Amino acid sequence: MELIFEVSKAGRSAVEVPQSDVPEVNIEKVIGKKYLRDNLDLPEVAEVDLVRHYTNLSRRNFGVDLGFYPLGSCTMKYNPKVNENAAALPGFTGLHPYAAEAMAQGSLQLLYEMQQMLSEIFGMAQFTLQPAAGAHGELTGVMMIKKYFERKGEKRHRILIPDAAHGTNPASSALCGFEAVTLHSNNEGGVDIEHLKSLMTEDVAALMLTNPNTLGLFERNIEEVSRIVHGKGGLLYGDGANANAFLGIARPGDIGFDVIQLNLHKTFSTPHGGGGPGSGPVGVGKAMVDFLPVPRIVKTADGYQLADKFPDSIGRVKAFYGNFNVVVKAYAYIRSLGAAGLKHATEMAVLNANYIKERLKPYFDLPFDRVCMHECVISGSRQVAESGVHTSDIAKRLIDFGYHPPTIYFPMIVQEAMMIEPTETESKETLDTFCDAMIAIAGEARENPQRLHDAPLSTEVSRLDEVLAARKPDVCWKK
Ligand SMILES: *Cc1c(COP(=O)(O)O)cnc(C)c1O
Image (cartoon, rainbow, N blue to C red; front, top):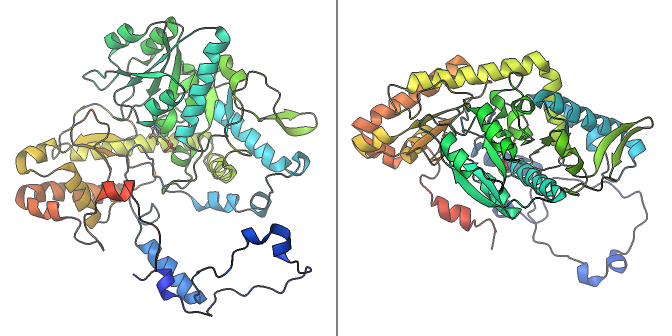
């Protein structure tokens, strides 16, 4: 495919700039010669070339609007277009970030109501909507934990993190100066209680727990875990990226979580991928409210306000007020589903994951044969032993069948892991055709392993050097 620069022909244009209706100014005088740029080497193309270029580019990509996208832990559910319509309302898109509070009452009300709804859904005392993504929410949560112990005058240096956790958990802890200590899983895929007891000392600030964890398994001993952590004065942090498994069914606040971050771009159906934008609200219990970032949105007799006089706050974590448009989409999602709808979505997500697990069980290893939550983790170990086909080969072959591969080689405690998250939005027909593809691939692994090593066979390019592409991306165009 030609680059847009190669399509360019001098003098062509896709836009007609309207006549100026304000007096001309000499820009050089305003900003100085130093900052003037001319002779920019920009592509010049007609509208039709422009549209074709970007449409063709988009067809080389894969998205949830194109097909099934069972990327475990990422919750790639279909994003209803009504959310987009809401976010595109001119009152939202045209709002200037510096608009006076009096002129932004509707948007502030939306943010306020979103905080209230999330507090209710998750059983927390208060939420901030500022963080820009899950990892940013984790960082915000751990900063609050740090401040909480500083205010209590307690020196705690460690945070416990299960070996199944997402890599952002230890990273967020380390960024706040904590030592991340690995907590083992037991043979049921849950927290090893004896190990927790041995690690949980008065030097531990918190346990960061994902529940259900990244194996898609609900922590059976969660109440005991909570007792052990709180018994030593520690806090229970919940990584809420897997909230799609319990909306309307269980509330982290009731279970004993003191801090939790959400991923609106996963659970609450706002589009994500390719680096953003996301939104990672953080909810806290009563004891932590004072530490929330500022500004906080408060409701007064005079309307909604951005308040920043909270002396114990960790301060600001994001310019303006978070990724507002993402919050609008998530708000529309919650309002259009309602309480019963959210619960039903969760039930379907769990049912769909268990359906896939049961259909694939005879063909792949299942490291933990338990009822799973919103995702299931299977293993390609049998295929490695029988025919030298690896999980990465299976993933690449799935592309030929028209599917985005599941998350692979994560969680790291499962060899040859494939983490499949169908989400609630997929029909039984889609689940069946996906399972048929997986079963066909398991057959190919035995009969024609070379085809799997060569896959994908249907794409523009086949196997790329993924490490090089991630570490040294070459995205510049040079003549
Ligand atoms: C996605 C995810 C995160 C990180 O969220 P981002 O929005 O990508 O920063 C953290 N923990 C778990 C379990 C996740 O699935």
